Length: 251
Image (cartoon, rainbow, N blue to C red):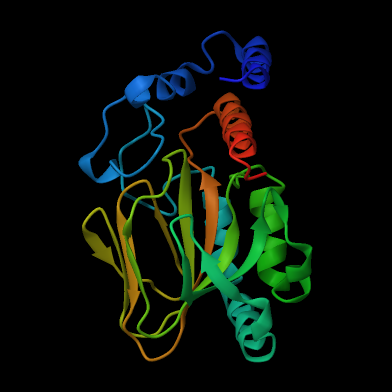
């Protein structure tokens, strides 16, 4: 740990108690400090003590229920605005740059990125932007280390099996526009998007997706804090990952 990290962790312990960061400290031990599910082997960090559950009930966590309900209620307007943007403002979408690679048949329109709202998107997808800001950003439920974007898979596109970097955030999918032939597999279990509804899963488990349909598939992806993490842990993890990225030249 750098002196900056140590000072930040000490301040958090001073505010929340000496044992408030025990799980984060265990995560940083050699070997990750905890055993992993075999299908989490590809993740870089596993915060111990979190439920090793690939699929979550979208309405099963009181902290996240208001986010899910707000996005589902707003789905008709979100879908209409997405269709208008895809038809008339296609240049606003870009090839999605996953940490593993850039993918041309996976298009993205970002609403939240690099720790803040993407203001240019407010006039493109105003309903989703408003719901995201009011229900996830202003309430501190979004993981500021990650993002929110419209994820559009073109016909025939696949996302290869992979694990994302950690388990302390969780991925919410609002099914915005879903043709037949689309599915997602997490930890070996395949599910299907139900348009207008949300899926919620732990993407530290190996997962993959596919669009075998005849038109684009779009979900709104929101990276939220795992509901079993605590406020001091969230603060410490934000400091940790931000500093690691700075040291690696990623800003």
